[in-house]
Length: 97
Image 1 (spheres, one colour):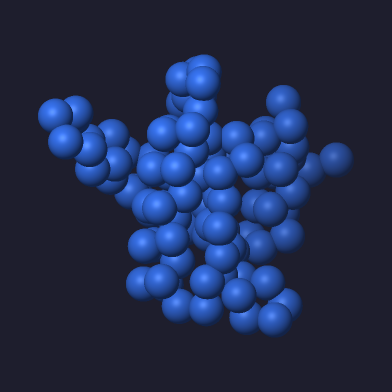
Image 2 (cartoon, helix red, strand yellow; image 1 turned 30 degrees about the horizontal axis):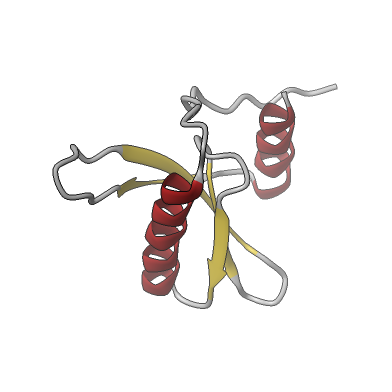
């Protein structure tokens, strides 16, 4: 529920959301695609949030650096997470009230 509210707020604030797919690269394991929300803050930093992995986010000044750091954040999340309950990103809805 919290992720849905966050997505609604970001959608309302920024108008559009970039979706980027990051592939997990692990030896002997198939790759997996993740949906990443990317926004730019008021100081120019790019911030990524991995929708399927609650709390998995990072920031950088360039898109290339952000994507590399996001891959590292995903790998660290997967390597340290005891529970492998990864949610599936379904979509974003904009609701007017």
